[in-house]
Structure formats: structure tokens, C-alpha cells
Length: 154
Image (cartoon, rainbow, N blue to C red; front, side, top):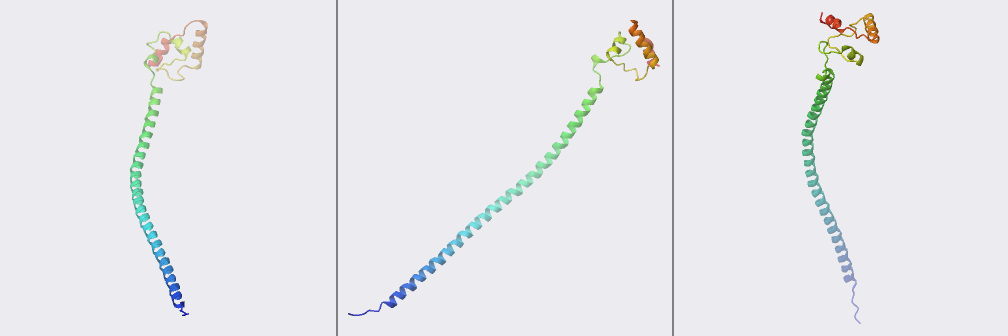
């Protein structure tokens, strides 16, 4: 029988397998790098778009902050006006509650009810006069208010 030496063929086949595995490895490395490059580029584009959106949102926020600042100023103005209106309402006596000494018939009842005379100043009556007025009131005689009204006119 003829002996054929197949060793060189086996060695060549082994070298071919090694070359194929190395080329597959480098092909996979190149494919992986290509995928990473694609992912990096797509993420960079997305980040750039999001940065643009953030800048636009910040610019819009600045306009809204200006509007919010103006709204707060208006709110403070409204509160001040409301406070002033409340003070004015407290100071202004409604027409149905206004009492003038020359218009009121039963002045002694108004004093008993806590009514006000715009012409009278606090402490106008002395203690002695107030005491005499109270004594007359409880004695059944109405106090004389015409004298008081004449005194306020002076």
C-alpha cells in the first residue's frame, strides 16, 4: 500500500481554521465598534435635541417668571387696595346710621344705645356734667341735649 502523508493537509486545515477564527473575531470587533459608534452618534443627536429643548424651556421659564413677578406685584397691590377699602368702610358711617345732633329727636336714647354724635369730641362732657346727665336720665327727666349741641357749635 501506498502511504500518503496527510500531515501537511492537516496542518494547512488547522492554519485555515485559525485564520477563519481570527477573521471572525476581528469581524465581530469591527461590528461591535460599528454598533457602539452608531449608538454614540444617535445618543449625541438625541442629547443635542434635548439640550435645545432645555434651552427653549429655560427661555420660556424666564418669560413666565417675569409674568409671575408682575402677577405677585398686582396681587400685593390688590391686597393693599382691599385693606384701604376695609379701612374706608370702617371710617365711613352708612347713611342710615349717620346721626347729626340737629336731626335726631331722641338724643338721650342714642347715648343709651351707644350712638355717636360726629360733633362731639371724646371727653367733651366733664365728669360732673356726665354724672348730672345720668342722674337726670335715671330720674326720668331726659337730659338737655340742646345745650350740648350749642356748646359743640362754639
